[in-house]
Length: 140
Figure 1 (cartoon, one colour):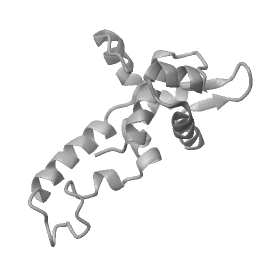
Figure 2 (cartoon, one colour):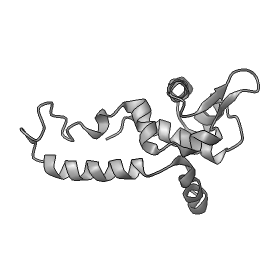
Figure 3 (cartoon, one colour):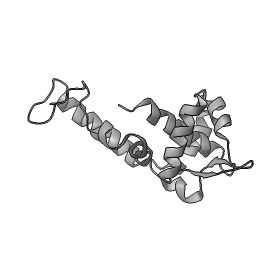
């Protein structure tokens, strides 16, 4: 449903959440999340341009979440990286799929998509911190 870029973006944002108050280099994030640095750098730049994360250049710079960015929702991250299409495209990849010409999974996919959208729309970044820490989730 989501591109690998989007999955890495979400993992990176959640990683930054665990480092709240710190500026973290792309090199450190890439190492900790086991993502290639050049690929991750582009993703983080896109998130920064979309104002979903913040960055500071220089020797003491890095990426971080500003207080107001903690209110971003997961859907905001998805849209910043993949646009709205991942939640709209056919699960079988058929171009002509739609209500007028449904694929065999269309009706079930519409229900599942609606559920995913609501979960992403109702999940603020700040609300996920306790889940990450409480369950000891590893993002790498």
